[in-house]
Image (cartoon, rainbow, N blue to C red):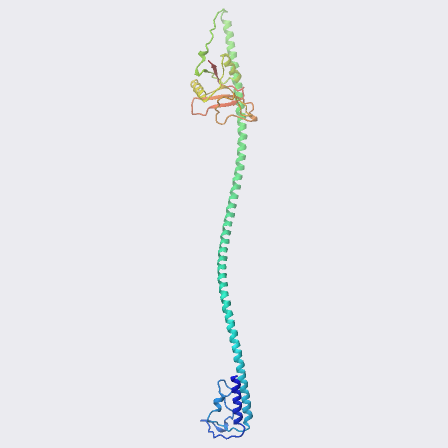
Length: 369
């Protein structure tokens, strides 16, 4: 509205000034050549010029004539157009300022939202970093576990191979032990056969000596009276109501059946151990009968089933030598039990199961009194 009023006033002034030719008493400005002066106001269209101040100047170098009214009108038209343009520009500037203020608000709002998002993103980023570190640590731990598992697997395989080799060695040792036992059994049988042969030779020698005496000496009739042997004379060791005595030879030539016959001839039975006390007493008594020998083997009346490990009589006291008894199908004929006694009480001694045909040094007999 203000721009329109100024425009109207300028048109009115210009119209009133330029209707007739008016001669102004003008004087040229200092340094101005009148012949070269431009009748048009210099610099009116430049930025910062004020047409009102120019029109109110007291000194003009030109004469205003009526023909100058057209130029002045054009000038006023240009000025009014510029003023309108300036108004439009100002309006647009205000709109632009409003948009800028709105955009600044939006930017500030977005910045605020972005700040919250930044904080959230920062927190999420921190959590992500922590999670990533945990994943890396777990990955390392899993790798270490896999490495340890691989090492242990290799160690287990090595142990399995060693165990397999040891199992093979053990089987070979068992086979060798079986062979050694077979050889031992064979040697024992050979020894028994040799003892039997020696016994037969001794018996033949005794018979030959008897025949020689019968030939050289005159036959005479000698009446003798055989005195019955008292049971108490054979009682060398008495425990409770049982007497024990040993019948031991210098040679290993007594089978189980022969041992049983030896005791029967004395009205006795092959010894049975009923408790540890009687067992220890008989062992000490037998050790005292060795007379300088290092050991002896004597029969007992105890039997064993190598297939079931059952001992008969069931109430018998049994103390086996280390590594005995022999059990299983291979040793099914080792049914009789004998006792090894050493002069050194610290030696391994005790009971062994063998075949009843084996030859031993003698037997321990017992008599109930």
